[in-house]
Image (cartoon, rainbow, N blue to C red):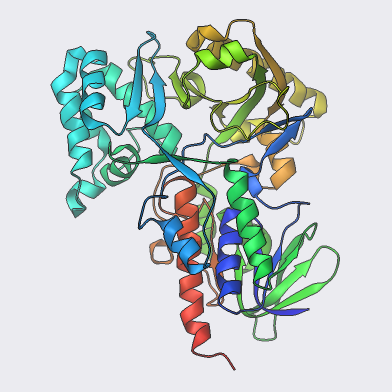
Length: 467
């Protein structure tokens, strides 16, 4: 089969690029190895319960934001969303809670109360983020330098947020990235039905525009022509799918080069850098609780700092977790118990060994479960005994489902840009990358933005040359 554009991977980045290009009249085929689209944000079902694996922290839905641009281009309205005056709640080891509210006066009052030892410095820090304008010297400076007047307690308050929102600590984070993540005016939204609604909407629009969605279609590698440029992709079934105009990869940066392009065709400097790049793994517990417990919890995700880690570098694997009940997909029946997802960071590569069998993985899973379960109850004592574990997800099981390298998720750490101008230029002019490992912003919004940019880069070239 032959198409103008072939998209490999049905995550939200691939779906967005495919939907935009199909809406602009191009013949597009999207190939997804799984039986459904959505990738790492797709709703997960266990034992009759539905869980959303994200934290439910969505931005970019404001007027003039990327989603308004996206759905305007697709000539439709997007999912129903609601602004949240409190995006999330940070809970410290001493039990103090700081709601992250867009009401600036209220937020500063909470800061003053929680961090009396450095109240003025803490408020000045956030005011600096709110008034940030990109200047080269300030943008590239480390955020830790701007925390020198603040107490260690406040620095850890910043760390738990940066790790959750940007997958890096204050020791690694630039001032520009911190301003994007923590600026108090940043608005968070809830999506009715969760992120799965966005996925389903994009898939439906793609097919309504004439796009071809092929599920259970595993891409093996790029197919190369006589001039050694990619002409399409080879599927594991033996079929070859031709792309006459462009190929878009929604795989990770590692898998795009390692699997699609191939090690022999990957430039040496790119191969060297890829070996040094890492992203965090996630350990998740899917739980249910009774209505009385659910009603006693904050309505927004809890970012729990479980250990101050004094006089040592911040290690999120041992110091934090996110309890998110608000991001869970709607219950199927009135009798269904409220559900939640508890997420902790873990070193993804530690879960993989050629010498480990299934029993070894189960043992590691059980040990991690006991540690996270204990930390969860210390941080959120109101859970009591009225919470039940349904299932866990590890980097290894996540890899088995998604085939992402080592089951890694989210941004590459330490966070830095991966654009064509910064050392990861794809060696072929008709190949483009979208997704969380190549986007330069934060969260789902940045993945959509990367797909928007790619679609706009392809479309003007193609529109002017259409036969």
